[in-house]
Image 1 (spheres, rainbow, N blue to C red):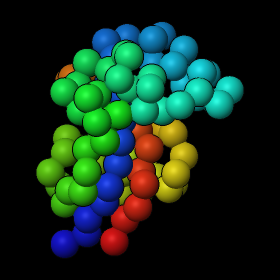
Image 2 (image 1 turned 120 degrees about the vertical axis):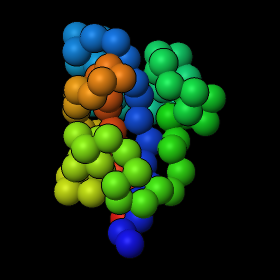
Image 3 (image 1 turned 90 degrees about the vertical axis):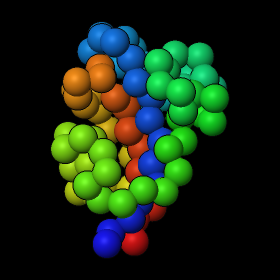
Image 4 (image 1 turned 135 degrees about the vertical axis):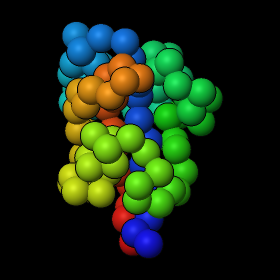
Length: 92
């Protein structure tokens, strides 16, 4: 079963996600922005979701983690929870 480790920032609007992504592109710290802005309980861990199996997350999130580039912030990716900025740390 493929596994991955990822972190994310979850916000309510696409505009908010895009503004945070611009800050990340300018060199802002992912963990600090997650703690400040994310609506997910993972924010207390800097947005880290730890390691999980393929298929455990909703499809759009799963596709980004298991098909997208490593160590690159992807998004905004819309799910029923809101808009995610996702960074896949590793896959195996």
